[in-house]
Length: 362
Image (cartoon, rainbow, N blue to C red; front, side, top):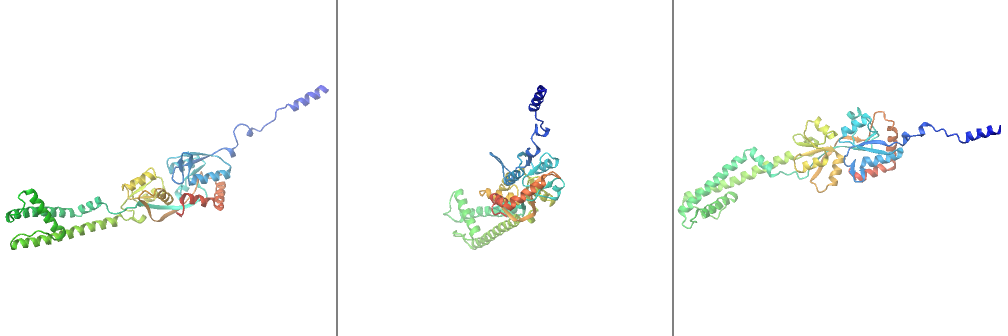
């Protein structure tokens, strides 16, 4: 009997512990990393040697800390690609400079907005008339033909004056090269200033011709001045872009998939597409486009970060919208993320982050 009791006690002592299946193998879902889709869009998402940074990334890291979750960042080449990944559930959250729009709400849900902005227009800071534009304006208006006729008359007058001098002035240069040069100088002096040190041709006809030529010279100077001035004025008026209302008739740089690109499409503007803002700005600096339409926060941040570039923003912020994180429809994370955004706002972290990236832009 004692042997049986001892055997039972030994069996109880050395019986292996029963562990629930959920505690064995993979970690719980609360500890698994969240898949965060991003689109490199300065200053909301920046790729550095230390990894991804930027306004949206820094804010998300604070939110992930509140949620007690790690994050795996997955980069996408465009906003549409990112939103499609969110919609299909390939990622849990979309973080970038994403505007909330009615069209996008058909595809994904959005968190509580964390920043407000809109669209703005960037232009070349030096908007004066260039020589090429003045030349084209003179050609298209027919002024160049008249200038050509005037040049022909000057050449003819130079030759006639040389022949007359060689006939009546014994002290005139005997060789043609110096004679033509001196006659051309006197002719141009009269054309441009209405005055000349030339002693004049002998006889009444010489004085009459000299008077007619002086009147012609004054008229030529007045015509050149007025025509060039009028072309510069027209170019100046045509080149002034003060806001979105002045964009029709101009070449506008856009980034496909953005709200700015959609705005230009809706208003049937002449556009050129670029893969990134630096590419678009480079085209603007080299006058390949006349303006860029993109979200105001990005344009102003890029302008402030590159003071060496001749770029500036004009006009008010239009098509005002809000930035938010994109989520799959009916995502269980939405409520927790919204709570964290409100917390970051009330604690002052969101305002501090905004000033760090945008200063006093808003």
